Image (cartoon, rainbow, N blue to C red; front, top):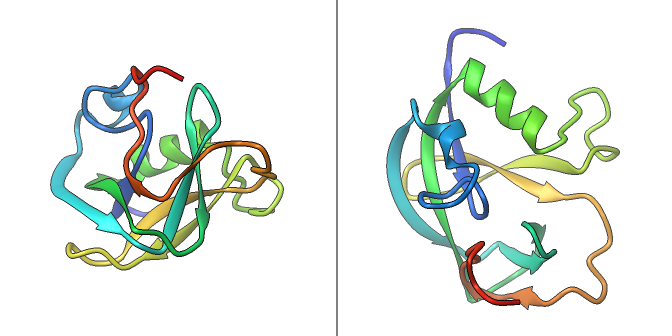
Length: 126
């Protein structure tokens, strides 16, 4: 990767107050928004997003440098050589802060509860 910056929209354990937020500690928080182009599925310890219409899923948008972006890819199991075979793929989606990369879950979500509006929090009872 080059020395450029990327926007990343996060919806699960990377959000403020969640267990993996430290990965974004050096990144610029741009704000929150609601995306109606994804639905979250509660997979237990973390959520997975699918490209489906929703009532609006809450995300946080960050400006990240290339090093952090690479680390996010590793955390999310994204494989640039074969994006459909990793745990997540990533796609750019429109946000009020510009296009931001969103990690999309690659596996079957049958039987998992859908979150069609609002958000996911690690501490919520399941």
